Image (cartoon, rainbow, N blue to C red; front, side, top):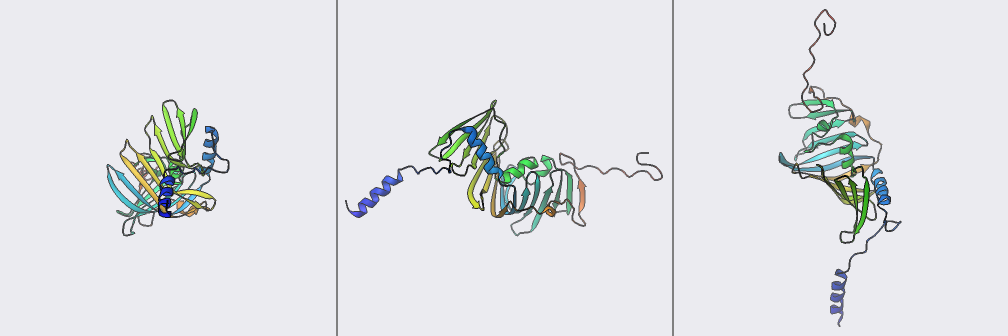
Length: 275
């Protein structure tokens, strides 16, 4: 066999060989509870994020892509600013976990009220509590409270498959065998959403997904967030989470469902309030 034929033979043979799965320093994990605890710790190491991103939304209400500045901090601090294709400001949303404020440049209006899921999720086609929104944007998966767990190794996809069970509800987690980070989460048995995390990068001591995808099949909605330049675990700039309306903006108070609240009438002259 000449050298060219030998080289072709080796390529064909090696292309059919499965790639070796690279595990962490502890090697193959066979106990589902051990893997669950290590995965929980691995994703909990990211506490804050600040930087730039692109957000793409596809939903029955419409499709679109916006640039976004993001500053978030666990458990529920949120600061999101969106701009259009020409980098013109569109809106800014801020929440300190208790109250929220949303400024829309169109109309020069500032909405404020309780930090309910409906209010904090105004940028999104799905409704999430602020703590859950922050977790997902930090590349973390909210877990169902499991009654039992099972674990297998998918050698084809080269991931652990950890399944959580609670009654009729299941959550299937595909977990990176080396970094113990969730790369996919699927919840079945109740309304919810699937998550996928891609393009993991090492940033200091952290391994972080620079792409987050959320799919809610019932709502026919898909959201994709791609980070381009972010800083992790820096002390948060608390001024970014201040709920101060811009000067000259019309301020509108809303309730927990985002409905405008009529201002209370002024007290009658010469008498106590309510007289």
